[in-house]
Image (cartoon, rainbow, N blue to C red; front, top):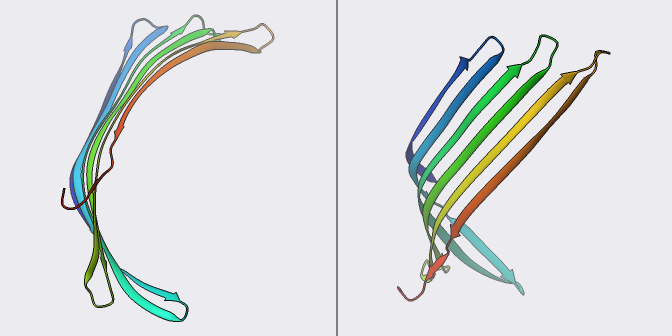
Length: 174
């Protein structure tokens, strides 16, 4: 069983500016944000058969999750047509950023056949992830006299990732 709620927002904006009849400068920004939480629960009935002895038990797992995610993508681009024969230069600068945090609490209750609690596991998982991606590229197209085209370019990127993954287990209510 799952119950959850949250708010998701998204926005995108972009524009092109014509510097001349042959040159266009463009920019785009796309961002989204999600904040929400969820509660999950279940029931698993267990039947263990060992040496013709049947043992019944059950597991009731539950969890609660709180999440906050913010993502952004930005692009700046330039396109220049040198002539009407296809000689052109394009340049793109890109950034993508992801910032995600979550806190998850887990509880697993184990019961015997008489519905008596035999074990209770409590765990917590606070996690944060930050990813920054930077990229730059240029492409150049050069038509030849025999209607062929020579294309070349370059691309470079840099990615920075910071993950903080923590897993905690509660022992003896501590």
